[in-house]
Each structure stands twice: as C-alpha cells, then as structure tokens.
Image (tube, rainbow, N blue to C red; front, side):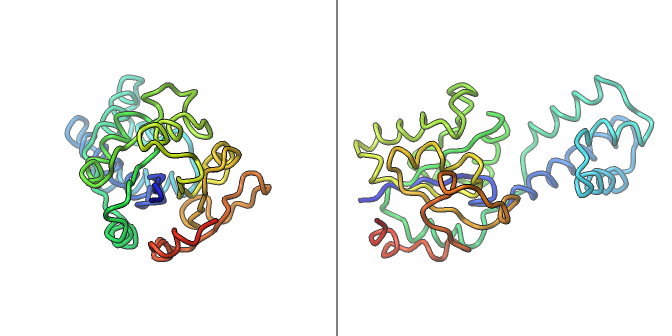
Length: 222
C-alpha cells in the first residue's frame, strides 16, 4: 500500500489564514496593553503584509507610537503562541476521508511551536499516523533534507518508491526526495503557484486540487 505524505502550509490549509489569525491576536494584545484600536492595528498589519513589508510588528508599533524592542518581542511571542483560527481546505477534508486506511503523514518546516499549534488547530494529530515538524530534528533537517522522509521509510518499512509526497513549494519540496525515488505531486496553489523551476526541482505530477488525489490515481502512479 502506498504511503501518503503531505506538506502543511498552503497544501492542506491556506497559510495566510494563520497570518490573519496571528494579527488578530496581536491586535487584541496591543489593545490590552496600549489601548491601540483593535480594528486599526489589525488593518494596518494586513496592509503592510499586502505591500510586502518585512518588519510588520516594528512598523505597526512605530505607527501607533508604542515602539520598543520589548514590545516587538511581545508581539512575536503572542503571534507564535496564539491558538490559531484556521481550518482545512474542503478538498483536504474530502481527500483525507478517501485515504482512510492508508498510512498518512505530514512533513512541515517552520517554528516548532507555531507548526504544532497549527496541527492541533486543524485536528491533524488525530488523523495522521505521525506529524513531522522538521525543526525538531535541527534546522539542517528542514526540507529539502530527506531526513524526515527517510524516517517515514523506517517507520513503515517501505522503500522511497512506495511513498508519495504532496507539496506546493518547488524551491524545496521535491528536489531532495525526488533524487531518491520518492513519488512527488505539486499542488498548484498558495504563494508559489506561479513559480516555474528547472525540472530537477519540479514534482512528477501537477494537480490543481486534492480532489484529483483518489485511490485509483495513487495506484496508477509510476
């Protein structure tokens, strides 16, 4: 039986919804400590994000006249530690139902606390065989490292050819494991949906929705 492994952000749910959820938590924090309007600070952070600004909390605190290095760190702490208001894509829900009975895993990069909070909020610890947060094994083992994928091979006692990985980021998701024979699928959504990379970085298959990922589809993969 094929082992199915998913990326998390922008594969199973929309990552920007986590960002907005974090902004709301920070906005509530700023109101409680500095009496800054929740709506005004939230909208300011969203605008900074849309403009591609990098140091959003710095900019927000400066804009509302409450900047300090301590306040920036507090905002980061609130953002990372908040209980996110996020949900799985509808096609993710249906896909996981179809794959009931298959060994199913998550491999996700990112801050350990942040990614754990996401997985808890999405209920994935209850539905997955195991969720690998790569940073728990050291930053060097984040994708494109094959470390966590080979751990899945060990857990399931299978060869790489018996594992299919679905992700969205062609910069790092496929280049490491593809060379070892893992099967790869790129879902064309999220921040990287329009990115074009050389063939060694690309997945074997490209899909627009997880609705395509049926048991029959998996069985026919070569």
